[in-house]
Image 1 (tube, helix red, strand yellow):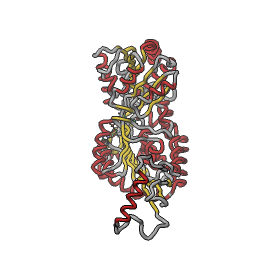
Image 2 (spheres, rainbow, N blue to C red):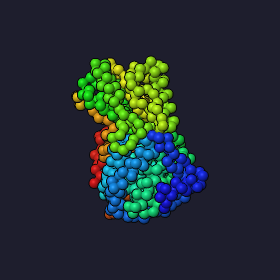
Image 3 (cartoon, rainbow, N blue to C red):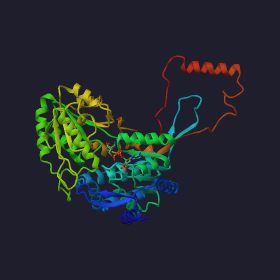
Image 4 (cartoon, rainbow, N blue to C red):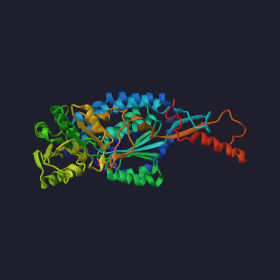
Length: 519
Ligand code: NDP
């Protein structure tokens, strides 16, 4: 199989290539093939042929390769970071902390948990008609998993979903965003070096049509991206009844209560809204601060944001906030800020696109905002932080829930019991107290959106089992020649069964059950 450089050359020769830009400089740094539907079909056919041997390798065999890959990631850390930085324009730190560290940990985590979470489960039943039978739930890989990823985290959110799919015994085909395909191609090279059998993991570079073709061919689609595209993927998958997981957009609220540790809350609001240039699905996108602490909170955040250094990343600690990765995203950010200002919002710092070359938007704080403004209701996905004054926690919860999205949220207070009670009232797949985003690094904890933010979860047992088909097995060992309910029907047997049902359920009592006792 070809190296990245060879594939880039092939793409240039074929003429149907997609140019890859460095958003921090505006330079074209590579180009990759735009795979057609026929090519996707061939890629998936090769994956399908390779999968049974990978499954047959068993957990231990797969673990050996996944752990080699973990070491490969650390041995090649600088090369991976520089690839990520070159195609995203994000900072060295954003690539190191949110991408290298996630994927390195994920290789070890899924290798360890797959045998445990996918082990056969023995089930007991209380139902008299089935008693004595052996009941088992087993998990079998679906076959070929298609992963379609966005551009904000080319390693974590694109390649990262392939790791549990592979650990479960599937082959995986990854369609990275056309904006950031190079990191995925590098991982393809890396896995080959680690001894992953040919065709078990392949990258199909291309645009939306390539992604759409992948949906038609695979046995499960894990999609991460915008809600609009997610709906298109769901409609396409419905044609073939292909199961899907959708991780979509968000508009994460941060609720700052009057008794919060204001320094921590202000530092966190600054960091978790501006890290990765604000291009994080679980970014703090809007803040509701209680009236008594609002002014102090706003001035601390504004002071922090004014100090952020933005520009082209040139190695570790060179800048704090990187580039806007995707060209149309800059227009969305500008539109949200303009719309807010037109409706009466005030910009305390930032508020403009940065100077070129490269694509930047200044870290921005907005106040005097409300829910008539796009900045408070639509996903901005940029380095902006609108802060709204609320009279009390009730108003904050009502406004936090006034959103089509429900991906993540946070509540800030020294009274963690009360904060947890408020967290439980927020309509969101994940809520953190006195923290944000770091729930994503606890791979034991399911992560998934409510409402327009997604379907299903990544991480946790369900985030692995979705890549399998559940099979229930019932084995009858010792049994009479004929069970009582079998033909021929007789008045005596029908009467006996009727009496038995009366005894069992006639008193309106809860049945004794062994549900969830799987051993
Ligand atoms: P998009 O929805 O535009 O694209 C996501 C992927 O889908 C890309 O690879 C894209 O290809 C591909 N695609 C486009 N059209 C189709 C189609 N018809 N069928 C199949 N695939 C298609 O999202 P972005 O890349 O713009 O990513 C940003 C969005 O992702 C934000 O809304 C963000 O919130 C969300 N996101 C959600 C996360 C979560 O975990 N919930 C995590 C990270 C991001 P191409 O790029 O070539 O067009």
